[in-house]
Length: 228
Ligand SMILES: [Zn+2]
Image (cartoon, rainbow, N blue to C red):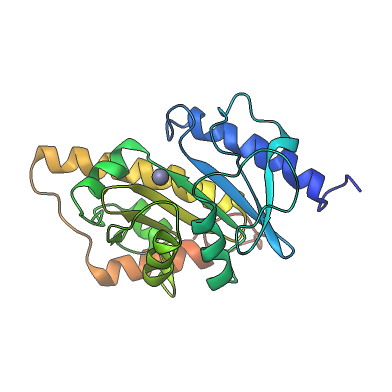
């Protein structure tokens, strides 16, 4: 089967999404990866392959314990992290990991990204949280991501001394969160250089987040209805 919804279709989609990482300035060389949940497992970028060279058949299929299910390339060294997140957050269908520079600069300082901007209240429902340091390669990073993001409004977390993980219902949702995370991290960084940015009031953050997540976007407008 190769139509929409098939694993082959998902492989092609995931390969295209990976090209958005360098295009949006989120990755350097081979660092960074995207995964997608598939029944009983996940698809993830192979280790050490550049984004331009990545092809759909190179994506690695593993189970949710990060065991490789098909012969081929070795999976990303972050696979155990992705698998842990899928096992513990059943609503997550896609995960993105980057070391995007502005967000990672906040992570290097172990500082959450404060909510200075309406766009941040919309997308993240408040500050982007900073998780603690965790070693690479095992499940510790996944455990830290799940500890912080479970029940949290933010689909993004920065991890101390490391980088960014974002989650979404789909890999494209997680990618959008990664792009927006870097965008607000950059603006927040610039704002701090200018002086003392004013954090949004929590009540205003709540109103903005509710409006954005329930009203904003395309739906069938009714004649005479006021613009939201
Ligand atoms: Zn990393």
